[in-house]
Image 1 (cartoon, rainbow, N blue to C red):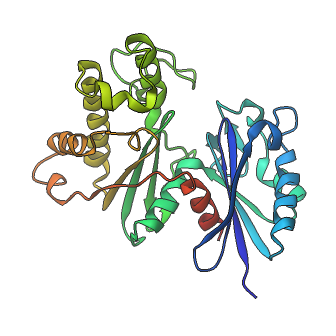
Image 2: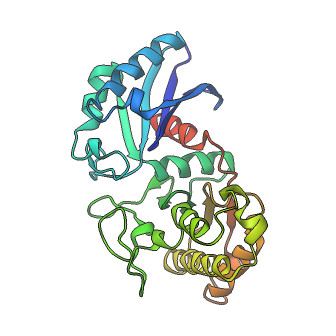
Length: 292
């Protein structure tokens, strides 16, 4: 009998769910307000919601994968710090949810889940080193080696919190001068409110793409991408997120600027820079694949 896995993508506002079949097709994708399914006062309620979701599908489910927007312990059993969902800080979340959902629950950082989904949809083989950079509300990253997350001593991978000289802003992580203060949707929203309040955020690149402030944003983003390439020399660099998915985002210009800053002749000449479409279900797909 075919068994399925469930993927869950936890965001600050919504939680997305999906059911993955053996053929790699997602079914029953839905999103629900985070406050309803993962309330601050009772985060373990997500386990009950998962139990109900699985029962509604009427098919055997072998495991659940959940992408968490924060840092986890190296074995991914405990959520250490989740800035947008502080109620999750310091919880043995995997065990809590497994007991209430009735199936094994596997946690990972949400960017790991995104890279899992993107690598699958782009048809990349798991061999070698692949890096993903995600420019969304914040700036996220993930690194795979031979198809598995590459982990350091604490299991962290936080490109968004790379310190940037001269930046004095305090980050959501508590430090001052993090990269995502300058390269993120949050930064662009603040820029829009300050300079172009009449422009909807979705039209920022359409109406103000030539502005010096937008060009400075792109130059900083290019430096970050080139830094990843020069440090890791990946088989492929995948770039995605809500910001690159915005209308008239200058992908070609950013790619050219990043390549210009890469070391010559290599890794510049051998780099495969790939763009994911940043679909809403990418995190769900990746989490379900990760669980499988």
